[in-house]
Amino acid sequence: MKPFEINIPQSDIDDLHRRLDQTRWPDSPQGASWAQGTPLDHLQELARHWRDFDWREQERRLNKIPQFVAEIDGAPLHFIHVQSPSPHAKPLLLTHGWPSTCFAFEAMIEPLSRDFHLVIPSVPGFGFSGPTKELGWTIPRVAGMFSQLMKQLGYEKYLAHGYDYGAMLTRLLGMRDEVEAIHVNQIFSAGVTQETADMSVEAERKSVEKAFRYEFEQFGYVSMQGTRPQSVAYALTDSPVAQLEWIEWAFHTWSDPEVGVPRDVLLTNTSIFWFTRTAGSAARYYQEGFEAWGELEPESPTPTAVAVFPHDAGVPIRRMAERNHNIVRWTEMERGGHFAAMEVPELVVRDLRETFLSQR
Image (tube, rainbow, N blue to C red; front, side, top):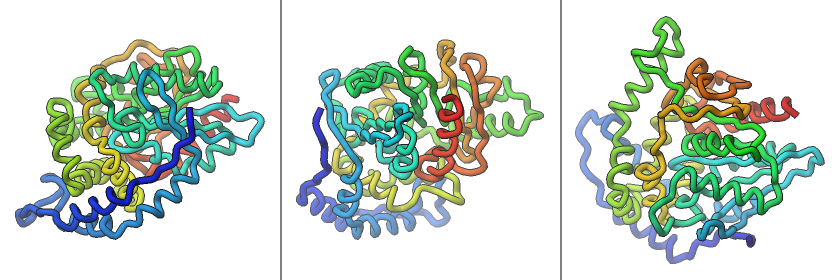
């Protein structure tokens, strides 16, 4: 285990600028909307901002956060580790999802570290954990890796939170005795269909609607990454505009339209994917790592808190979650979407503190 500092070679930054300058833009039919993908004028504006983006300034900011790399299960694991000054602090493991990195939690670090020792890994295949070099990276494998990391850091018992991929991993980690309680933004098996919903309840009608839209209007990225992740890797590793569009479409589609992910956060996130060449290894989880997505998982006795954000891609329903979870807290948020840690970090911080500090 050793300290880590971000230092992207200047030649990589120059290459990014050259590629952005030489982008071959496609045409776009009149009246095209987000239903066809990110609109051309919107993406061109974002690309101009990325061309002028001061990456070195982002490096200086991110390098103020204590970062480390450990080798676990034969692979490098990059992680943030911030220890709290509080004598009563408990360890809290935070896990990001796709298409983001451990720095999705950046705005939450300072307020949470007042009361928690924070461990925030980069999922293998994402960001500074680097591209995974072989097949076989699944949620159970990564959960075991994170468990080993916590033990190496001396944390025999800890709390855990996650969203998206991180919600699934957190739920699996919660099956281990070492995890005292979990907090997630999603439970993917807790949605309802037209057949199982109580259509007289607004939340259940909304859950059916969102599930329909996701499956029939937004599922294309899953089909591509789940069947041809290497094809995706060629495009996103060679074209920065393709990488930018792939991420911006997700951030725009599943975020609160009144809030959204801040532009500099988007560009920092996209830059990390670009410089680390991890688009392909992150995509492979959709082929190898989501075998249980949406299925009814084994029953979990772990105290589980759920924060439901109104503009998320899906809406979990409490009665469905209670089939196989020990639900101790269920919070319906007033705003925010799938990427709540980047959109409304103050709401996530508040709910984590109220969940875990009240249990203390």
